[in-house]
Length: 67
Image 1 (cartoon, helix red, strand yellow):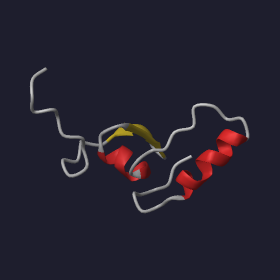
Image 2 (cartoon, helix red, strand yellow; image 1 turned 90 degrees about the horizontal axis):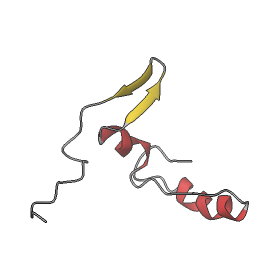
Image 3 (cartoon, one colour; image 1 turned 135 degrees about the vertical axis):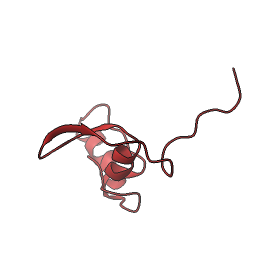
């Protein structure tokens, strides 16, 4: 379950209930579906599976320090 954007909290509220009902591996998708698409993950739409370019405003910044 997910919400469309970062302002929605329906999935956050539903997660504990889903866990109580026995669903396993319940996770919160921070930023919602919108951020998933904007971070370059594949999505499925009316024309099949696609992937958008990574949006620099929402993508996780690379670690600047070498490990």
